[in-house]
Structure formats: C-alpha cells, structure tokens
Length: 64
Image (spheres, rainbow, N blue to C red):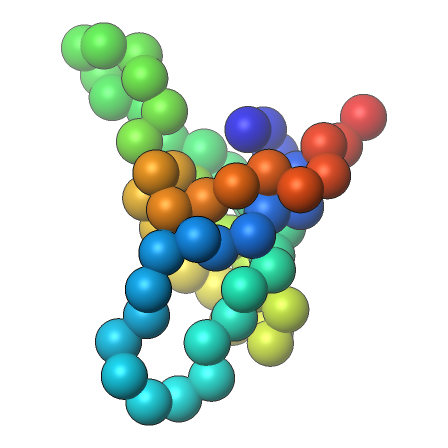
C-alpha cells in the first residue's frame, strides 16, 4: 500500500451514519521499531478524511 492507491474498507463501522467503503491513501504510517505499516490517512468517497488501521484496508487499484 502506498500513497495514491485506491482502497476498500473491509472492517466494520460504528452503527448509524454513512459508511464509506472506497477511498484514496493520502499518507501511510509505520511502526518505528518494526518498520511495519500500521495505519493510513484516507480521503473517503464521501469527502471525509480519517486515519484507519491497514489491517482493515484492501488495495483495489495501485497508483503508478
């Protein structure tokens, strides 16, 4: 997963409200010790922005 990738959310949202499923990765975060990717800032299809754990994301289209 890298900046610009289109992703799909595979986890579950809290009850109520709009639940975005598709978004674009804006920034990725890694663990300082293990260097494993932990979370990503995502711009969602409904115009909102948020930070999500990468274990709940699936890449559907890679950026070039």
